[in-house]
Image (cartoon, one colour):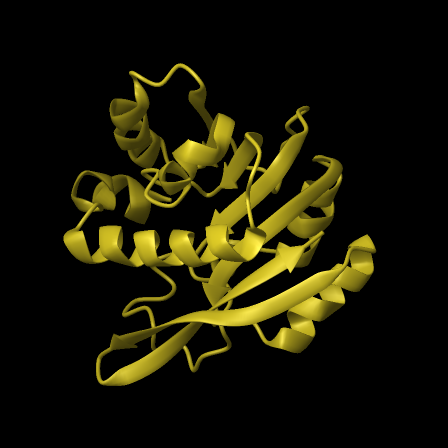
Length: 196
């Protein structure tokens, strides 16, 4: 968490903004959003991902463990009364609210037990709700320059792992590659997994 607190004020680089816009656009298209929804973003950071959903949201709740990141998030959303942030570790604490859509971008590889998190999130869905997770496909550990220091717990995820989580929560599951990021002369795929 200290890594993210220290990085917060310089987090929103043009590269990150462009990447999150690309990921969000693909996610919104795949979800075919039409009505206004109550949305939760798990690991919202500075809000780059979830704030792309503003046109579709009646409410947005951003949850993160990094106070520094949330301070940047709050500075962007102070004029938006339907957007709020919570400093909360959902792996250990509960949130007694229900949502139409729960999203998470590039957060699940930081979780201790992502499969258990998905079980918890599934219980927070309204009837007909969906979960959309964007993260790295399985990689060799080279995506992050200092994985341990940066709080990385998993080097991406295989389709088999993502599918096994769906079986644990008895939801329909689909996955597709939505982006390929070039970094250090290598290519890393990012997936969108939808549970509904």
